[in-house]
Length: 157
Image (cartoon, rainbow, N blue to C red; front, top):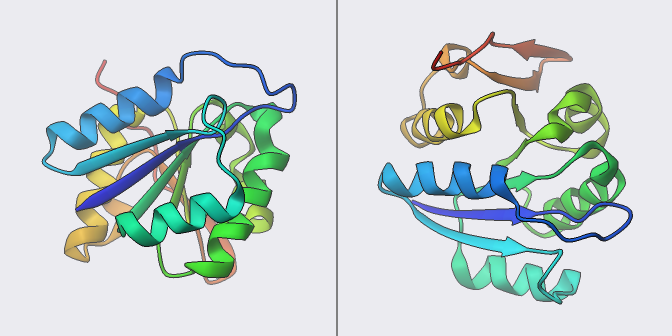
């Protein structure tokens, strides 16, 4: 499965190594998925360039990582992607997961990964790919039937 991972800049547009996105991407790759990483902090992509990239790469899942201060940019990005590709599930993780309720109800994210993304993200991808019950994937939140479901903690320790 093609998976697109996106690192979202903060309000300050600083640049740091996107370890969370890299860990989750590496784990998805180890589980047999084709992964492309886009770092919007370092790459000069317009929204239209990103939409074209999505069209050309045809991901079945889009993962977005960031910190809490990147919420506004993340929300705008999700809105733009959903306007063109509303059937591709968008998964958000990293420190920004601390505002999971906003990501799910206001920003339009489909799933939020909490905690150990390198464990949970490949499990979520597999569940989506196989049409499995997502409530069995520990470490995620999703908005369904007017309420938020949280599936507990997924931790390797």
